[in-house]
Amino acid sequence: QVQLVESGGGLVQPGESLTLSCAAPGFDKFYAYIMKWHRQVPGGGREEIASITPTGDKWEYADSVKGRFTIIRDNDARTLTLRMNNLKPDDTAVYYCNAWPRYWGQGTQVTVAQ
Image (cartoon, rainbow, N blue to C red; front, side, top):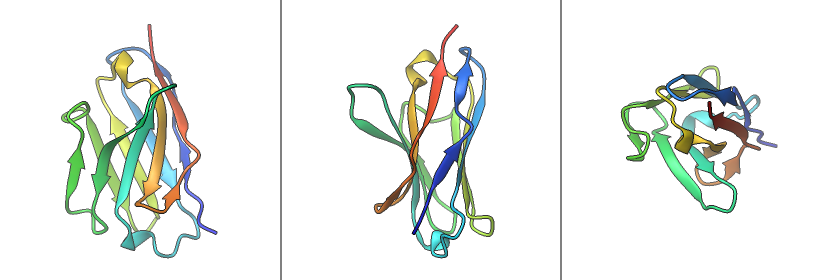
């Protein structure tokens, strides 16, 4: 059974940085999947914010995070990372790791507030 486990969420102040990790132990086909990060606020839809190709050579970002967030993958370690800089209150959400389209993590909460 494929498991994606996010970690690294927490409470930070505006302007600070945070790094999210997604571990996929035992996911033998990790290298074959497009990997994505999504986020969701209470009562809102799920927003795709970053994606990366299986080989890690191409990536895309939502306009809301472009220039501030960086998505990175390590196929040997089977990990996906999201580096978030200059965080804003609007970045507050639950963040999900996704092996597109099939597998999802349980989510990790990020809160940006004074």
